[in-house]
Length: 161
Image (cartoon, rainbow, N blue to C red; front, side, top):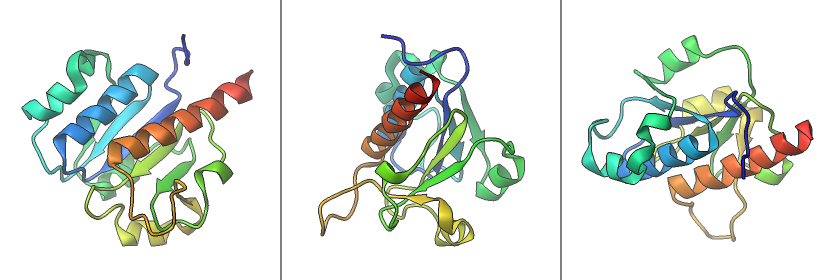
């Protein structure tokens, strides 16, 4: 079943990821959906890490990816197109309330800390949360990316018919 056309439907942005297998799983999700992957440093591992490569399996050759030195560099170089959706467990706006369009950017923070507080404060109307039971802290990074990407793809597909 083909989900996407030749243009990348979404941009996934991992800010300072720390766990190689999580990033590898996200890379695999991006490869099979056609999403672009932006890795924003500093990274907590080498891009040559065997656990990162193992999690991505044979999808690395099919993946559009770019490594950005830091968040400030990414923001300065980011294209002016596509809305920004900042995923955080502390958002009051649910994933189900968000509207996604082709070319949007889905931001996710590091496993232990999430997105930087200063970045979230600079974009207060852009935060998005994934619904969870009360008292739950957070979901795994690669699980969160999978949930967000497929909901966004569902909306994009519905919008284009």
